[in-house]
Image (spheres, rainbow, N blue to C red):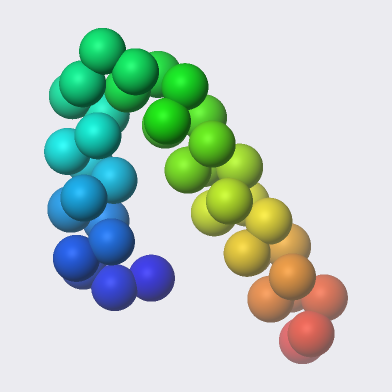
Length: 40
């Protein structure tokens, strides 16, 4: 994941919907890591 994506993700966490967006972003991150670990 590049820095720009992380920065925008961090920015959305500061909004009112931050908690739900953070959850969705975290779920996406976990899914990505899981997919990567299965490839290895």
